[in-house]
Image 1 (cartoon, rainbow, N blue to C red):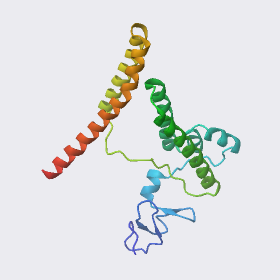
Image 2 (image 1 turned 180 degrees about the horizontal axis):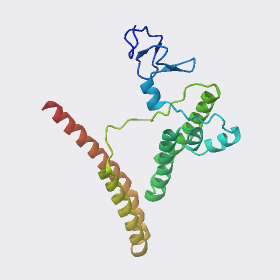
Image 3 (image 1 turned 180 degrees about the vertical axis):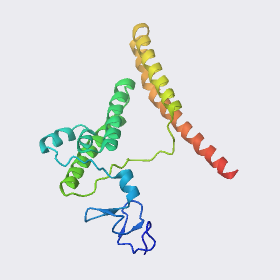
Image 4 (image 1 turned 30 degrees about the vertical axis):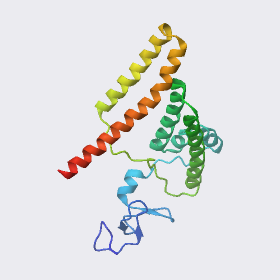
Amino acid sequence: MKCHYHPEREAQYTCAECGKPICEECAHTDGVKALCKECYQTLGVKDVNKDYNKFWAFVFSLLPGAAHMYLGLMQRGFILMVIFLGLISLMNLFFIGPLPAFAFVILWFYSFFDAHHIIKKVKNNEIVLDKPFFRLDIQFKSLHAAYGLLIVGSLSLLNVIFKDYVPWHVIYKIRTMLFPLLLIGLGAFILFRIKRAERNQVK
């Protein structure tokens, strides 16, 4: 098998991420697995904090995402922290049932053990990847950010207005209804995008 980047050379490794055959010169390896230069540039963490303090690594691992950032995995840590704080905000804003609390506990345990697995990899000088947890087939642009700010700002304003002029039991009812309505709207939006993509493929 020939190297993907050097067709005249034999491949000694296979990229653990994309599966490309690569020669020794093109491989970034830790002795266990190898990455091609493209995957290493995209996902490989070059500034891993190898001088981490064990005590602080443990303390930061108690807050989802914090230990990942401390170790240098900024993308993974940021996503974990945003989801974690987002769940707290949802529970506080919408007074919803046990589902977010259940997800809250699962996320905490996942982040805690994931952080300690990464600490073990750093200790063993293994390649550490700052991989996202999922890929969204949506390109977020300034327009999406604007919509998000409008929604959050509107909800915050309504919360202030309702607090002074609307009875508490009515506010509670509205808040409990908002989250299911948001889920329905999000589901409808995703279905609309899927159907539109299917129609475009047919054309």
